[in-house]
Length: 145
Image 1 (tube, rainbow, N blue to C red):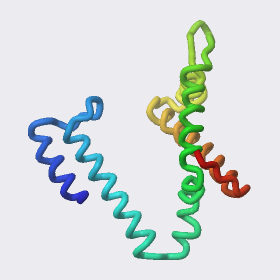
Image 2 (cartoon, rainbow, N blue to C red):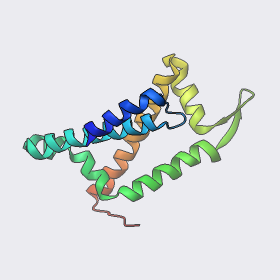
Image 3 (cartoon, rainbow, N blue to C red):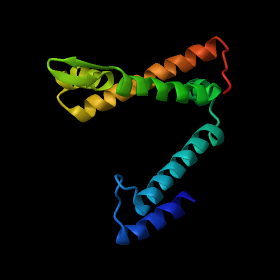
């Protein structure tokens, strides 16, 4: 199926180039194909290879997230919304939201590359929510929404 989606996306590239900003048809097909390939790879590695190390160690973070997925998703969106839209202040004559301030002053100022800084902030955000999921899992707290 993923190969078929990639082939269809390849055909649409002729008429409509891949463009993420406007979600072109070719972009939708290619990203769907990548998701299908990723799912197939995960299925092969976890279920077909069936190695205990993979299931008991490497897949644990997915188990933690899978026990409270809606709670983690909603809490993450609410937290990000709070940082981006609700906590605003002025620093050195510029208006900031907390997310932009952390990104710019906390990381981009010394990393030099704004894209790497943004990726770092996003990975730290992911690590925060993985930690929350781990704590909830360890304490056997399973929130159903």
